[in-house]
Each structure stands twice: as structure tokens, then as C-alpha cells.
Image 1 (cartoon, helix red, strand yellow):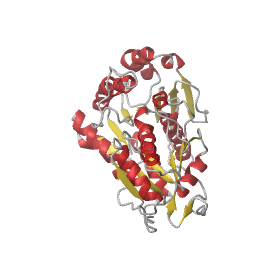
Image 2 (cartoon, one colour):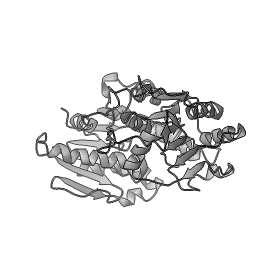
Image 3 (cartoon, helix red, strand yellow):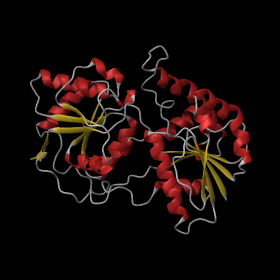
Image 4 (tube, one colour):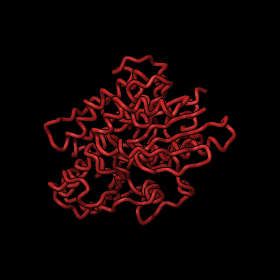
Length: 371
């Protein structure tokens, strides 16, 4: 079978991680005897992957050159291009399908902006304009793609429900397959750092996130100001940003308690989940990887009171929830955590804190292959 994978849009952060995870899963799947001489062709905007015996990479940097070229490809020329590759199935990892293509198509939707209802972005606010485009304009293209697809794969139940409700497609067309949570080797067995945690009291917080507006770093900065106004200063918060990555944060005063540490290795992220308290004020996510990853290693966390957090943390005792639009609520929970009054010693849910042992990508691949 020949499978063509369309992911021209992938270039950085979450989309690139999804592409690489899927690529590695394909390699593993093909090497375990599950495959029947499948041929994979990845169509990308940059040479992001290596070719293998049964994996070919085609680069369409001309399509990636501008939004105009991307729209032209999606709406006019893409269908003929993919048809020329003669796929048995076209699999799109970038939320949309080429208009006019008539072969079998499987769509992976991981863009939540058109389906969440708790934030409406404005074209008239410069800092929100890009998000408004995705929510209102590209969202229509995603809806149309969902309707044309033979199968749609999503990461969570809330996305499945929202897509079915918004587009009116049949329920059996949309499949939920949870993403993989891959814990680095040895992390679950690593010792807790007693210099950080003392008698269940932790005064170090951590937010691993990129520079996207709805990741909501501002809520944390406002909570810090509230805590300082109460005379509470003996704590530290680490952002995986470089100073200046988020221009909209420049209006907030600097706080010595907030450290901008930039990107860090995955192993260090998981060690911090074990030893510090995850703050997660993001209010728009498809899945919400940091809460799921922290849960997998028994971490403590203060997270937004949104459907995606409740879904990935259902039944977990080590999470406290707050309104992501209420910095005072976050400050209150942080103060309780620093006093040792928020989490009990029994917060770890051993049944659900070890991570999945079987790859969700295997099920995605089998949906693509029609198995």
C-alpha cells in the first residue's frame, strides 16, 4: 500500500513534534512485522526527516513560502499534485485536506481554536489577529476537510464531541486516539530532591510552554504580583522562554521570582515534574501534554479549569484547578501549596501515573491502513 502523508505546514513546536512522533512510529511499525510492504511518502515544507528504504521525503518549500501559496495549494493545485503520487490513501497531519482530491483520505485534527467556545479572538486586536484567522477563517477550511474525510482522528473526547457537533458528521467517522506519553528512562524511579521538597512543601513552580498568547503566561505574572503584595516572596517560577519571546508580556514588571530559562532537555522537564509544581494556565489545548506528562510521573500541578485538563487528569489526586482568567484564584492555590495545605502525601494515582505502554500511533497507522 502507498500512503502519502501531507504535513507541509509542520516547522516548529507542537506540529513538528507530532510529525516526528508519527514518523518514528511508522518506522517502528514497519520493523515489527505488522506491515505488508507499505510505501510511505512524506510531503513536507522542509527536509525535516530522513529517508528510509520504504520512506520517501518530498519537499515543497514553494508551498511553504507564504500563506498565499499555502492557500493556493490547499484550494487549487494540491489535489492534482497528490493525485500524481498515486496514493492508496492520503493522510493529512495538518488539519486540512486539499480541496478537490477524491481518493481515500484520513485527517488528523489537532487544532483546537475553531472548536473551543470559551474565547473569541478579535481581528481588531493586533495581538489576537493571527488566532482570529485560525479560529474563524482557517476553521472553515478544517470543517470542510472534516466533512470530506473518510476518517477523522482526534486526540481527546472533548474535541471529538465538538467536531461532531459543529460539522454534523456521523459519530462513527470521528475516532479518538490518545497521544503517547513517553517518559524518559529512569525518571519514575528517580529520587525526589529533598532540597526542593520538604515535608510536602514545595516553593518552586514550573511552566514548560512556548510563546503562544493563549498559553497565558500573563496570568502567572499577575498572580506573582498578588503574592508579593501579600508579602510572600520566597518562591521561584521557571518559564521555558527567553526574555522577550512574548512581546505582550513586556508591559508587566520584572519579578525576581520569575526565571526565564529557555528551552531545556526533555529529561530535565520530567525531573521538574517530579520535584516542582507544574503551573498550567493555558486555556486552549487539544490535549494538554504537560498535565498528562506530569501525571505520568506522579507530579503535583495547578491547572486551568478547562475540559482538556479534566479529561487528561480524570481521577488524579495531584491536581488543583483554577479559572485561567482569574489570577487571584491562581495566587490562592500557589499560597496554599507553599504552606503545604494543597496536596496530600497520597496524591499519586499509581494505576494511572505510569503512562501508556502501547503506542497510540499504532492505532492511528491501523486506521490509515483500514485495519
